[in-house]
Image (cartoon, rainbow, N blue to C red; front, side):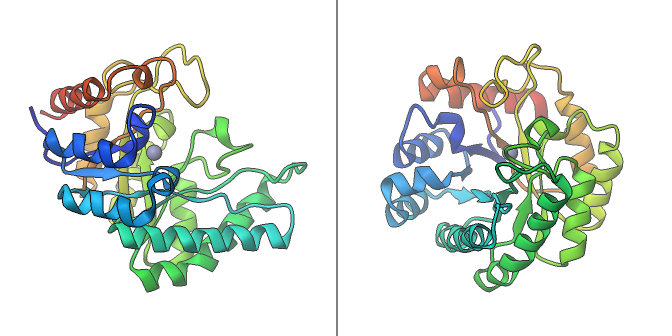
Length: 275
Ligand code: ZN
């Protein structure tokens, strides 16, 4: 079984364990990286979380998540910027390799997606100096367009790369196959992301058919319709050598199973897909 290069996004076992137990379980199985969520860190306190990760010798492939920039008024947008700066401070304390950004959708009561996208661009520009100061790059994660209304109005890799390009260094992308597998331009855009040296994260799970829940029915790699070996080749060809992060939200299935079974299945599928 292969664990080298594997990261577990801790949302994958969020119902089974608190952060210290989750990272200890990952370390015990030889998994080298984790990606914690802010609420998981807040639940035990930043110092306890950082110590648990350090004591178990784990690396942090990313920190989930910042973003959510659009808001109905200037005060709301400023509050989002301030909150993202706190997220960057936490990411730095945890030693995270990037801050993963779910950029936000439409402010309540609005229909102007172009304006929302501009708010995202402005929000990114506003936090970038802080990201540079604390040494944590920004990873824009394009989300599947079904989330454009409420979670992320950045929906393709091309769009994320265009935004990053306007901002300069220390901004990149998190490529989550769940969100971009359907994109007819994906080959071209992954190659471009590699050329522009902007791949900061690589997240995998699988797309189940039918998907029963818009948010909480992600599949274990190998159980759905995403051609993961092909993605792997594209990512490798683009020069990415960082970790592969398994990230599964699964209210009815994987979240109901024992955490150790989930982690062992992640390792099996990772080994099978990337052998
Ligand atoms: Zn992701």
